Length: 149
Length: 149
DNA sequence: AAAAACTGGTTGCAAATCAAAACTGGTGTA
DNA sequence: TACACCAGTTTTGATTTGCAACCAGTTTTT
Picture 1 (tube, rainbow over the protein chains, first blue to last red):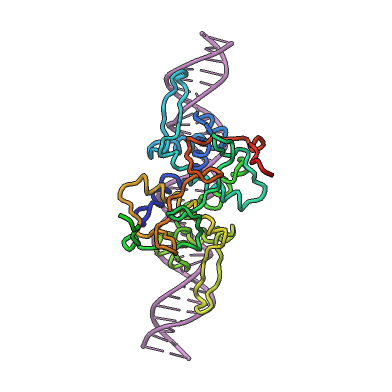
Picture 2 (picture 1 turned 90 degrees about the horizontal axis):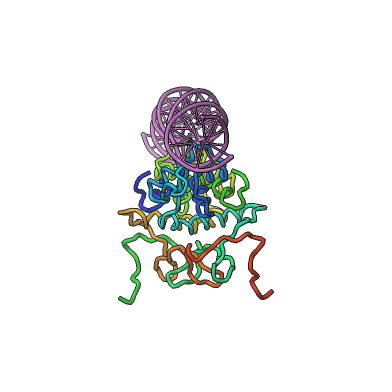
């Protein structure tokens, strides 16, 4: 899984294993302790252990022993981990759109007004919403100039 | 991998296996034949066979025998498959941001002006760009009203 | 027409990974 | 002191992955 000309292989190296994305989702939902992930996801303890170690190793999560109860440990998202939110939402939104009977019980809302966020979409450089049909691939070397430098 | 209250589990059921996302990327890049996927990705033929069958079964790709050369087959993205582009881009973009030395050789550009598309980001219902810190989870039943119905 | 080569697979087998259950060792609680 | 709790590790078996060889239709070459 080495260089194939874009960042996808690396992303998949970190997040592509089974359970990794569900662990991430659980972390976004506020879970922090090993037992919480274990019981929420129903994943085997040894697998969970390995996945968490992998996420920590790749800087997606951070493992810190709990101050007040030294049996416990906290796994928290790093900034790098939090940056996966758009990808996770896009994937989730896709799953919801193409599956019957999945109305999510938790929805992300804007703190300011309590309204759900917009679906993840693609935009041109100037902000216009844009779809697959409006796009084409271009070799990185041959890009049009941004015009105005 | 059943109901956990959102569409992510279903999305992962379809796309969560190893190679699936790389096959998808190859399809977005225009590959259509079995041999093309095989040699581009370096994936074992039996695995590729299984993955493609899975993607077809879940409606992400469509398998049609080639008219002009009846040895060949075409695998093409369906509308459901094309709808995975935002998720794929978000993932790829994350991989690029947090990995050294990955400048992609192919870039998606707007057909109209040849300029690269904007990074995938999150937006409030009214279009404001918004980040993880501006968001919170809300039980789906207790949503604020959109005001104006 | 026959031989060779190409395409999209399948089969068999070894290696790696996943998963369930039991166990461990440090820590807090009754 | 006894007991429960947390975060793992170990052990063992099942599943998945991957390589290599094989195969059956189709072109292509000779």
